[in-house]
Length: 114
Image (cartoon, rainbow, N blue to C red; front, top):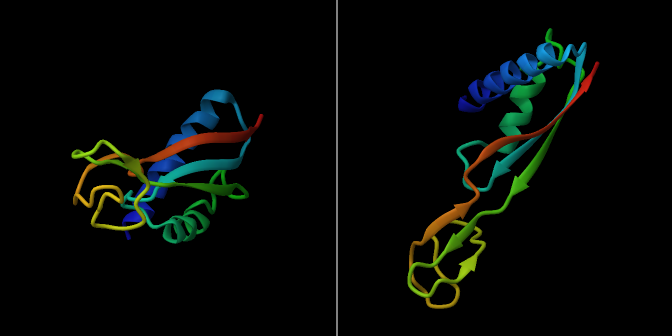
């Protein structure tokens, strides 16, 4: 499960932050998950519940913010939010386009108990 390695890396980053800030516990982690990132939100949550055990994040909550995809049609320039693959422009019907947003996995906020 690739989500487990993503959560392990997330916990390592957040624990480093907690150490630098002199925090005793990690209370909440807010994570932005792009619609077309390679991560499955449900699997991220499951991996988090398992891997946080025995860490300063043991009682932390993981808040996922699901980010929609945004695509620009290279033919007519329309920017739109596709629901699925393949991308098809709703204005001109062109297949494909440039993915502008929706593939990231980003830590947006961390709440610590100092």
